[in-house]
Length: 361
Image 1 (cartoon, rainbow, N blue to C red):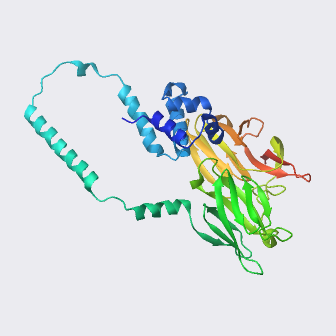
Image 2 (image 1 turned 45 degrees about the vertical axis):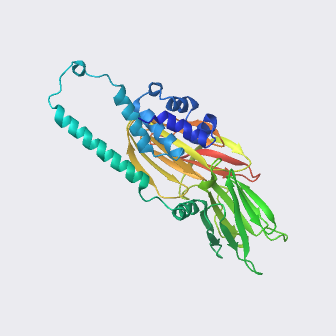
Image 3 (image 1 turned 135 degrees about the vertical axis):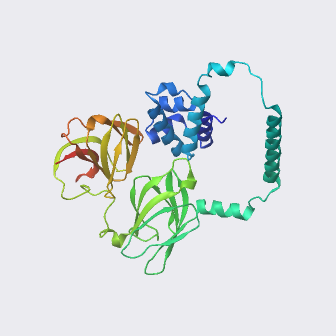
């Protein structure tokens, strides 16, 4: 039987990831990552916690989480004590039918093996097509009055309309940072940065690029970008406005500053439910999502600018925020009886960015 711990460890090592790096990106402590890779389920407070962390870790590594969880449960069944009745010697009553059944199984198994070896295999052309879909060779063109929000891959081409003709940008790198090849030279954008780029070598920048998601180790995952023509930038909402409430009608109350920095970047909130709780959230002015969660369940929320939270029972859930490789526990005890709050980036006149938890009436 396959070992789910071995699969996790080997997959992580194949991606050249350290346990510390995984802990920073998934908000799962190094203690629990090591426990999963060594199949020490007894380290977790209960089975639901082990399954929840195992699902998050497997999905982060790009594995089939349902299959990994099935291996965990199969291991528990295998380690269960054997009933005493099975130790009692007994004499088979139907020896001949058993021999016939085994022979049929062997014949079917040999036939399946021969078909697998000699049967039709995927052609090199089919394999090449699958790889192309991952690496990408698409062409996108910026349209006046609209921003381009796409996940781009190495080899993709972005056409920027200019009075003298389209300028071609080629995606050169999608690992750790986004590198673009332009007529003015290669240019790089870091995660969470909003950068004005001069792509034609003339004074002044022509486009604004915001990089909201990129892998540190896997270039095939591409990069999530938003590109705006500079002439259209004023009419387009900035990824990090000076004050970024999700809804303008919100009444602001007390605030707590989580961290300060010279730039804004995506952040993640992990909700671990201790008991039953009605929980609602909204990320970056998107669709509101609501569900009834029970003890042991884990919810992960990611945003570029803001997350709004509605919590029916703040004592039933533990919230942990991860940003820039650091983890912060969010204490909701200072909020009202039915906590409603924004976790959002703000920017003051000195261009200082603050990640703030703000109470809403």
